[in-house]
Length: 293
Image (cartoon, rainbow, N blue to C red):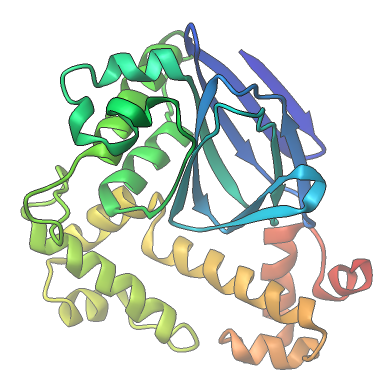
């Protein structure tokens, strides 16, 4: 395992098996951070953004893929190396899987015909796929990032969760619109949790209480709290606070708004409370952040 610190940012490189690597990136800085890793053309790459955003940069900046929250990319090109060059926004969390193509084929030997780039003449062709992440996948990604187990069990837990993630990523449900969630009573509740997140974002200046939110989506309060944490990796109001701070940071970056205006836009009636929350989140006051741009 290779654990590199870059300022307050971390790149963890963990070997799951021969030809199979798990990378975890977390930018805890108040500015963008770039991380890189050499990857040769024998590897297939899967990239998942679970918080904020990042950019995958290739060919010296001539080719850039935006990787927003809840999005994934699959990349494979047998004709050229594709080293990872990742530009991460403040607070961004990204998980990447590097799998040697021969190893990858062994996962699906009985099902190669179901996955287009594993079948017949496609086996040696380059492949590119972008996909929105569903709640099941986001839940497992957050579990991989925040395992919370004794270090002696970390590798075993990560290995199991990575294989679970691959299974979910390539699974095609007979009911494409339904996301099964083992931590909720039924599939319809997942849509209610997603609706709760949207309500929070749309009403972030005057958010409902947890009881009101549970009533709006017609879900018991405890199911709302448990389901939200399992799907998004945070409590309801921790998620809302992080969303508000990231939204405020983006507004400040435009330089079109002063601190009082941004404070109002994200629901703070007193700028001093906003300044304190922003400093706690990013380690710098809004004024200092703007001066550093």
